[in-house]
Length: 224
Ligand code: E4P
Image (cartoon, rainbow, N blue to C red):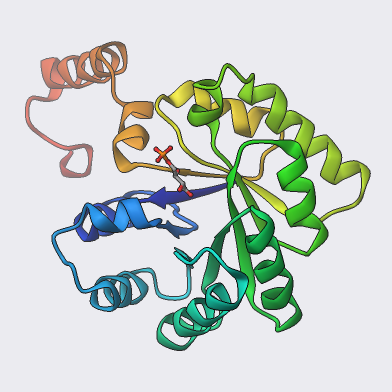
């Protein structure tokens, strides 16, 4: 089970990498555009320095495979050959994926709305496919079922492409992906916090602290 951070925010990346066992960081042009740092290479280089040898996924922005390959090469030179090149699973994108995989690079197929896109990305050797859970829901698609279908498809055909669930607006959507067999999810820090913070959890934890203090005051157990 892999948990990635879907952000380019340096503070968030530092915070959640310290708190949790994070597999890596995913970005896209929208996520990048939200940051104050407008120097793309400065921002992504800083992220690479923070994540070290953990995963970094960076998206291309061209609409034809030749330019996508040029972008991929620039990403690999600046951020490391092991950087996952995120490419939309459209016709030109799949062609670019094929070339990058032939060249020994790493690929994450993104903007996945259907099992057939996932199938084509897997057929050229994509390392991950990223189905967009919430955006699929907004199209009245049963995202949990569609992602379960991708899991079954890959198993039936012995594909090693992993599923990286993306585009989440609530924690149930994240759990749905993992429960149908998706290997990985990329989520915001806020949603990770929501998973372990709510009134009933706080009530339980506060109760333990209150009962401890009723007997031992402010002393910690290592001070007894
Ligand atoms: C990550 O790989 C995706 O680009 C991202 O999760 C999309 O999220 P959104 O639907 O909230 O834009």
